[in-house]
Amino acid sequence: MNAAMFNIFRYCSRLRYLLLCRQCLISVFLLCILVYATFRVKLSNDYKNAQVFYKTQQSICNNNLNQNQNRTKIILFWTKLFKRKADENYINNYFFTSSGRCGTNQCRVTNNRDELCASDAIIFHARGPINMNDMPTKRLPHQRYVLLIKEPPYKTTAIVGHLNYFFNWTATYRTDSDINYQYFYWRRKAKPTNETSQKSYLKNRQARAASMISNCYSQSNREGYLQRLNSIIPVTHVGYCSGTKCHKSREICLSQLAETHPFYLSFENSLCRDYATEKYANVIINNQMIPIIFSQTPNLYIPNSYIDANQFSSPEALGQFLRQLTLNTTMYDSYFKWKDEYDLIIPGPDDYLCDLCKKLNNPNEPYKVYDSMKKWLYNDAKCQRWVSKLNKTIDIPVDESMDYEEPWF
Image (cartoon, rainbow, N blue to C red; front, side, top):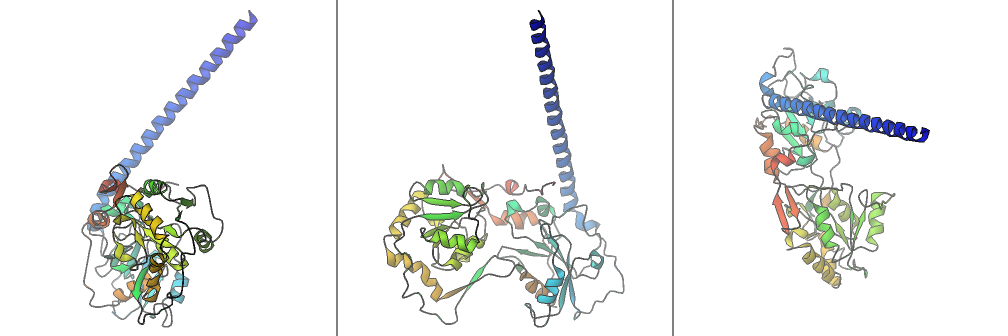
């Protein structure tokens, strides 16, 4: 009898525990719905406010401001650069002196918002973040609002796409930006050389391709493409997504991969117009592997320095070509002859400020404003995704790209 009562008691205790757990889960679920709904309502209000924000700004500042065209132009960073403030002491001392990197002392940068009315350019980093509750309320006609971002559209805070009639200039990876902020560019040498004629680059390596990837789920679906390529030639993945990490410098890791891999997969996480990052540039500097790109704008890359996967009918066709290439030393080595004609230029992370300063000091610079940031930043980017079943790329809906929000914590 006692044993039966004990079992009944234990059963009831377990039942009460299960019911309590169920109630807790339901409460947590409802709380999540409430928080999400509140968040979406806030975003909706922010988006509406952003579209007409320019109408609420006042142009009331101190009448005693110095309007002399030859005065030192002030560049104000309104937001942080991701999580850090701009290093104004370093920039002003290293860039904006007569002997500095920009070769001029006609500009200076500041993080001090008290200088808003005296500023000639106000920089908003799209991942600063831009917060509608933390925006300048005063604006003068001569001031240029500058959008700064190197990320692709789907990694750009969505509020930017709603800020119409707000930005005057852009500094992004796009070639049609007002200020050059590309990861790299190239130029033809004044005098060609002949340094590659006596070198052999293949060195009996077999057809293998390497990649270093930290973004596991790309918008471009590069992982799906590489999975099929791996059925033709071995593909070695290094980085966060593969579980195989290289704990040395990037340069050393690339050199180690180059010992056994004649090809490097410089696939970007986004297949968007003009989006080309250091993945290609690092391999070019390493000078031991042929970079394989997957790009909408191959003219960004040095001629004859790469293989464009987008020019092949399928990953398998690319793989077959790579296998044939490793059987022909002369053809393989031809991908390195670009060094005789071209130079690769990698700008410093703050070099865009030189272009910005030059524009601010140009009295003939015409007035400009972006009436639709959604069109320029998202529609015109023409982002695509590779679909394995279709064996081709398709356009990504703009609303899908325009969906990024900064984490709450």
